[in-house]
Length: 183
Image (cartoon, rainbow, N blue to C red; front, side):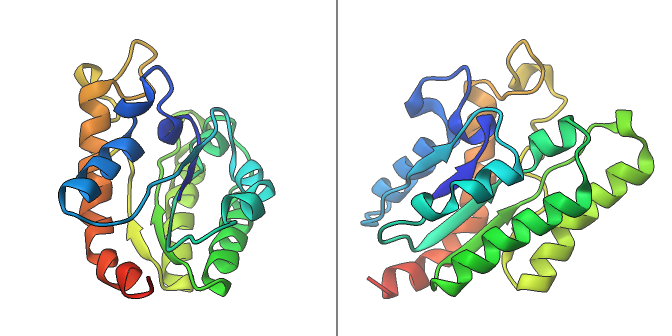
């Protein structure tokens, strides 16, 4: 289950071009009998993800990829509230025996260096506190590169989505043996 915002939903891309579908293609090519469910909702914040968590985790979910926080940062929302929301998402998933991959996000610099640092640190703190696998920045190598983003400068284009899928796959692949063992 990929729980996220427009970056996960693949805003501006066809469904098969979004990073969750690209990760699905890798799973299929490797012969893994797992389905990636894209639960990305454009505009969603960590609070929105928390509100829809129960239905998102309904079913046989083995791994939860949490890709929320970008909209919290874009809106300058409380880092403490984001931390609490994401912590509750992680705790709920782990209580159900679901492995969690937390994808970090960066805040834009316009809210100042203190906010930006606290925002970044919140993800690392959550990963350490909850002992989950951590991808420090979902858009590493993609953010800020015009060749890898759509005209809005925020959402990855097809090539950028492939790079995001590569990053996610690097963190996800080591989790697969455990997820497959619980089949």
